[in-house]
Length: 164
Image (cartoon, rainbow, N blue to C red):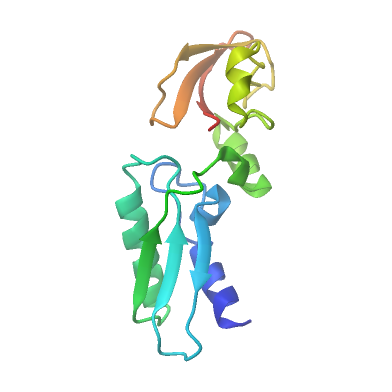
């Protein structure tokens, strides 16, 4: 395993503080890993927040540095970039499966296009019983990136990871 692969493997253990079943690589917020030619040079990790005001980004930066420093990388820099903006299309398939298993409906595929705002809403399947007979209760769920839904069949509330 080369140095970049080793660093990526370490980053795959850093969890999202708001959704602890997901890693930052599941979320697709790790954009790039830069390593110098020598083994002693600084490592730079480039990340993109799920939205520009995400309160978890400081914690994620600290956790990245801590994980890499514990693995022996003494100088770690984390750089945040806002462009291109993060999209739910960057969530990995494994991440989508973890969200659903955790009880959060993953973002519907194909809804990253903002033109979808002007069409009929697609049904959000319940992550518990898989019914599509669901309704939005609130645009705001347990965190700003989720909406609160209720299944009209099993009557359970659930978070839906908003598309953007």
